[in-house]
Image 1: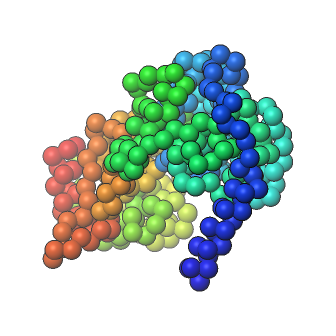
Image 2: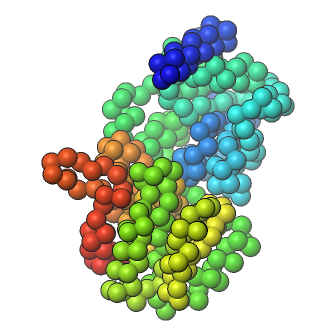
Image 3: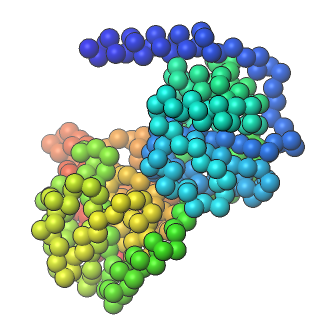
Length: 354
């Protein structure tokens, strides 16, 4: 079944290239003098990726304040930028046929379109560009595709052995910008921020520690034993109050941990989590979007990563106040998942860190 699926995927990409990859890019050059709009496309709807991209939007707005920055993205990642003053318009991607109506809405109205994806474009991606018809399309490692007018080519070493902000630095060069600041931006609505600031402020006489147990796959999530061990160890050694972030169904599994020293905070958006982190002292989290949210506020962070080298480099915390922990060797083999990280190791780092 896997081979059939892969063969079908390759056929769709090849067929899409045959149908839609028809454009004479030799006539196109990047000239910012007449640019009124730039469309950025983030097709994967990953919240953490969008947090890191906020530095791009800010630096472009600094250089070209009159250029309208527009973003194509999914519903979850749109939450990150919905209050960002550097983003003028958000178009939601649902990965359904009705996305076509959005494409038609902006057809022939975009000066520059920028595709973040470094892999070969899918059938639907090429179709999107054919419908929207931006004046100029920029892609990453897209030199084999005619529909991309400008390809920013990076080596495998630059893609897999450099932090994501290196890639953004190269992107900005294309726009004539030599940026030095790649800090992330998160803008929280005042009502949301006031609500969670008040909750956290009740414990201002304590060390306020946020624990996020969840991630996008089970290999990154904290185990129940780790959560319990961290809570018990922190409260035994620190005059602290713990905020345990809770997303969705996980509440039923951890609600028994609620106490006068542990708040289980049910959050429904990344901006609610961001507000709690903003007003707390420290964050413990697996490799997920919360790492990048904590980086935006330069919070002391213990980030728990699997033994996947690329992730530890590309998506490392952009934060001088962060420490990355990974699983230790186990009988000569790497137990490469977050639940393998010993609680004692985390507590030992925390003791000297907080």
